Length: 463
Ligand code: PM9
Image (cartoon, rainbow, N blue to C red):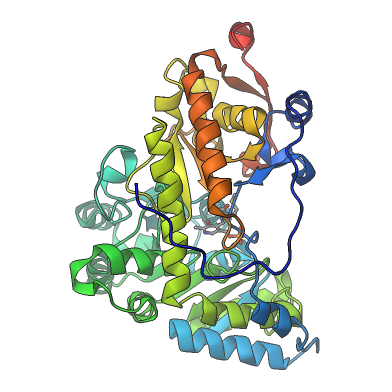
């Protein structure tokens, strides 16, 4: 197992955490309806629910908050953000939004006509929800390896060009609003897309007159994986690779709560004047004026600094090394994990962990609950619950049934990761005792956030 190089930072401010006793964890889990999203953070010891908005800002980001220009219109903070995004990503226009789904909303409403398709490399929850709200239909064109947690290809996030071409032939390019490339693919285990594949996808779309959009929430992590895995780009600066990725697409929707180390924010970036005009106009309806998009001036400042910090190679290298370290530790404990490791999280294969459970026993939802109960670590389900129901009301049954252990940036140390691996390893050794769950409350939209569950009675005796 590789050793983890020391963090490229030291800690200046701390926030206490506490492992609540086992009986309390059991009670809190029941109160939360066995949904880790409904736990209170004070009851969580190590919080690996998400890396979204949970990052630690740098001293320079905190300092930047103080110069936030809170003018309603024409704020200097927006100018600084716009300049940072132009420099780092290379797009001409920037429309800020309160977070990523705000940008998805503006994009979907601007470019999707009801009945049109959006083809992409696997769905993401909020992205598909906004495609569908705009009247669009999502079509998955990711490579087959992405659906296999045990396949060890370096770029399991790639678009399958054959699938995309056949799809365009079948429906006709005029029925396709755009092709969306998630870089990397969150729901597939944070798997990256190669630059070769992005370039080929963009060329195919250009030939067929179809626009291409990037989900850039973790584009820097994707760039760092290209640098590590793609021969033509080996060792190149992440900043250079990121710019090249952006050159391939017509627009990019970004949740800035990931790569850019901030706690809130998002934006839409493009060179397309028409999209910019439409998004700016929708922005005033749904987000706020087009120079603040629902954010305070200080948020824009912290983001402007974060955007420049995120492409520094030593930061991103350490992040990827932390994720790989946790993955290798879990692997050594015998815990089935998705490989290769992605950039933001280690994904546990819940079907392989709990082979005695059926899909209707919601193995990943159950495993996330039992991990919390066992050791106070909060994780997230990424399986049948997250996938929701199709337009006929049937449960979608994704090939992957995963529990995500997500690392917030610059928050936890190696000892925290060692604890997580050791405790989940111990849980794995008593996996046969663990029951499944079933829904008792199922909200209509993005059900995984607010659903409530209970243990499957037939198996409760075994727990
Ligand atoms: N991702 C995550 O934890 C937070 C919400 S879902 C639990 O992974 C991608 C690839 C994302 C993403 C959010 C969004 C939406 C878009 N694309 O949460 O609205 O991973 O900022 O971004 C979450 P916002």
